[in-house]
Length: 426
Image 1 (tube, rainbow, N blue to C red):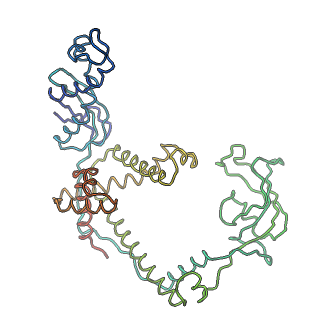
Image 2 (tube, one colour):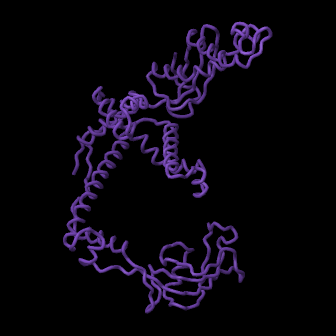
Image 3 (cartoon, rainbow, N blue to C red):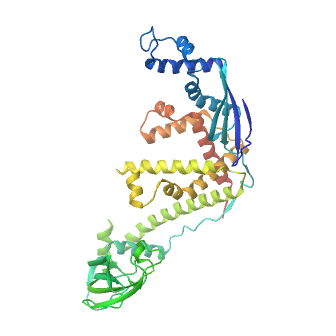
């Protein structure tokens, strides 16, 4: 087995791995292929599926089963070779058999491997912690949100339409004096200021009164979805039937009884203080984590292969698909509904995938530099947590999650804890 830098280096950490598979291993693979294929081989003088391997090889050549046997050998042989070379394979670009005989075979693999990175200044990172003080203004904001959720819609009769109102309208659009398809509706509820209609439409309804009929003039954007309307001037005839607005409830003890289990406004404010305080603490902790992560990524040095970002984005898409299935929707339906395809969906996750890869590499590098170790007790504790979380027996969790991969995850967690414990939080 030999590992050397690829002569066809198209991206970072591209190597050529030469792997030798011994004769015994190869013979077992050849025999397994023979047993699978012999059922469909007819040889005169033998019942179908009963011809000896030696007879078949004599008739069709000793290499008759080699190709399939080599295909079966590649995964394990490549894994063992990478392990011996102390590299982690990110992707396999190509496989090429060099020579094969009864004594074994040799193949070349063009691979992308996980890089060896460097990082400095990861201990003593300075971060600023957000304030967790619960102010009266924050409490008032929370109460205002609750008021808005409990508002009732009322009809306005004593004023013109204002921004934020809901206008119930009939409308019909014309371009060059001709009505166009999709430009007409009746009793349409339009929230003024929502930006749901083309620019200028909603603004020109503001100031008009109930039962008023009027026209407005707008211009369709150059990037409008309907090709025939792009950049066109249009006139819309409007009939304003009704103006509706949200009427917010008065904040008093009765309001408190309606929206909570408290009896008085003061009691409700005290409850809100606890809720807001917990939220601020959680947000501050997350912000500290984000700042530390960003600093670690800034300090990370080394060339990261694009394949790592692609693999992570693919994994995130698979996770998203699993969540969709849990909600009773398949990926094709979702993509059709959103007007995207597999590449578009993957590109949505690209930036986040890049961050995850960089942070993971940074923490793995910290773990290596700090000689962080994982004990059997660490593994047992993590397996127990997973078993409890997934309501499974520990032995089944161990069978599903290899200790090798879990060890790497625990190292990363320990590295993050170390960096956070040593951070200077202001």
